[in-house]
Length: 293
Figure 1 (cartoon, rainbow, N blue to C red):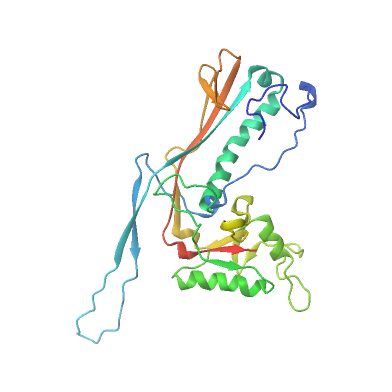
Figure 2 (figure 1 turned 180 degrees about the vertical axis):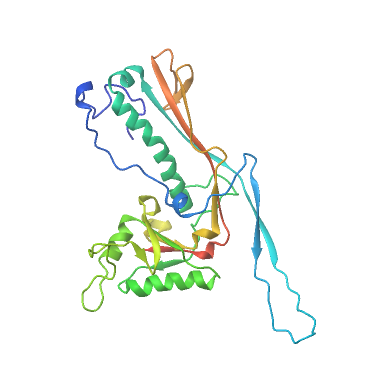
């Protein structure tokens, strides 16, 4: 892990204020689930989400006959916000001399939160609480040699749970598998807008490419397959946040770094705290299918 205290002597940093005009970094990360799943209003104390189960039944009626009666079932789920955060300490000289680099580093804070949200929903690590859903135990379909059949099997599993696939989130590894899939004549199954091999849609539904939906294979006693994507009825899930991303800067606090207290004012430092309260719920986990390699 890199030294969390960012200063002008940080490892790998060999810059002058004049040589930071061009900064190479990975693209800003956006949460796949926050893009594909509808957002609902989430107050700070949480919200109870009603779920309608089943549909009313209609029937034909003879003239003058009594009309049939029908209703639906109800269920509920509580969505509460859980806090996810990161604190980034800096020296005052770092911000003064490397202003452009400092701005780019701070901009990575929301990306770190979005990435952790996706990883948690995919089942990596522990959940923040009992009222936060993950897809860790969702049904799985292996993307084997018959990729086209595997994709249809995934769609059929969602259909069997009374759902309708409305999107696919693919990791770069999953995208690679689909890009290389061909028919019996060696022609790509998936073509981009310019005719090149690419994955813009799958079975008529949109795709979203995200590193956050990749789950490495487990080894040893916890051996699990590598997960390279997820398909599902994203409209049947929901996420919410009371206030969105919140940023706070302090140079007066004492924070803990590597188990040791650090007084920011005493050491000529400051820290940027980036946090978000976030809730996520799924109506029926069987309306999602994990795609494995």
